Picture 1 (tube, helix red, strand yellow):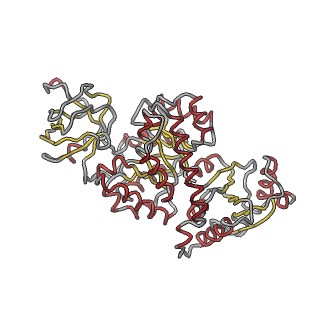
Picture 2: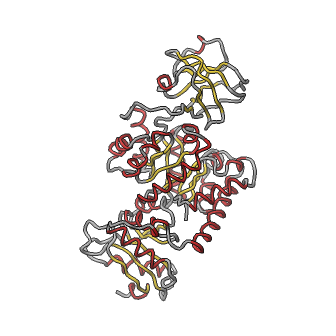
Picture 3: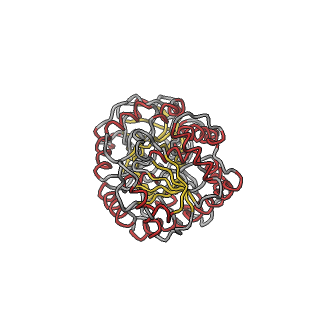
Length: 472
């Protein structure tokens, strides 16, 4: 069913914590390069690979997102307080105020307009723009509070005019590529063109770019973004502030509906179990939120501060997995077919094959479904149509970790390299599964590309006993 992503931070950075999270059911570990040092991230990446090599790593790069830096005022401000956002290397002695906050991206000076309202920290703080100069922006606070380090700044209905990558973007992308990171989260992908530039720069290197849907421009261009996306993330914090918080539930449902049509995995993120930063129990609304996200077809559910800095990271994981499991039982009892199966009017060969396999998988004729895939691309079609867990056997760790993002998929690493010329690896896989303790007398549905399948995602469906295949 839906996979669990846990953000690593001070609360979970040790090897023992990473091992515990993996044992509890975390499939993907997330790091945010906007926080902590490069050296810290290098250490955590190495720890994850050592402790759980089959788990995936998702790294969010700073990208276009406007944030405060570590150089911020630590004092609490009052309502109607005048505060200042300043550019890097600004001489703060020239402003007679303690309430000075450095920002990481000077594009804010072009986006903000006098008299408009802007927000910070996922909309928890709001300000009026009082004045804009070349080096600082003067704000009036609408509420009291703290504007802390590394918090996002949002300008609703704003547009990013930059399309090309800057040196900072390239540095972080190269860092992720050099460490063979599995997924890179790209902030504020508002057009397909911007995502394409990222993908072109990555080239044939390992990471898959995940487009973060965070503003109204991304919603307008959603279909074009999905057409070239490996996966997307609904960043509800920024999306709600950039559009309208009252509309976030509808936006989430619309994104999931559209993405499922394309077979694009969707990560639902932000405040899924926010109360568990402090409390050992979730709110009823949070439980309902997770349930509805699974019902609507989310591939992954992401925990941010809950596991990075929260007091109850393991309880948060256990809570989320419990809700996901209960929802999975409900789906299997009431909806044996996915919505895509019911509305299937596709003519693509892989769609037809996947829908056919879904029909077999929904019965009790076989013990389960085993997809055999070198690249994992065929799994994208299967995940669209199948509402229950199935296995995918592949022959590299790279593909194995990319498969973790697809709902319902349980990846298995083959101990033999696949042979494109014949089906000998199919028989070796059957023997491997028996050696792992699988019952040889069980009947399974296999789907794979056989000889003569050049250019096809999936072209063979076979129902057989494990012992029969293993005897070849």
